[in-house]
Length: 247
Image (tube, rainbow, N blue to C red; front, side):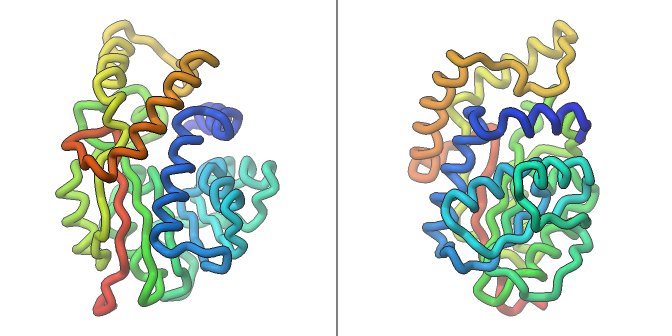
């Protein structure tokens, strides 16, 4: 990811509707899946620390973070998140079966070999471990943010679940989310492309009024997506458990 894009994310992630709403969604899913204050958690591809903020807020005490980018690590440490290591999701520097939970949100779309990344997630989970995976969805939504974030691909739900199973992760729950804003985001990205608008991040297209409005819409979205299981969305969330026979 571009350093300028990371800088914007680091500045806004505490209050921006997307990051704040995702934290609430992820924390609900993790707690429902058995997360406790004593769980051993790995946040891989931690970026500028949005998930670390979420884990701190719900009181998880044993958290390790990994990122392949030194700039991201510096942003995390500037926010007092110290246990952040430099490393590659496709070759993580951890023993087999170390963690109760692995969080990999908006990560595997950045790597060439996403299957290898998912296999590593499975490897470092213990026998009862669970993973939370989130990825961008639908190639038709490809736009400015994918470019500045250096994405390799966007996903569809069924192929993603097949790849997770191949890696030794058995999906427990999965669904598209951010479905209420799917059409507006698709349209906005087409207009950005049509007019050749250049920004360091799509997150710059915001204002206090828009942030408040989108926060309400996204809160409704993330509360209903798990129940309604819409056939489309801007992103995919999947909770998976490690297959016990996986070696």
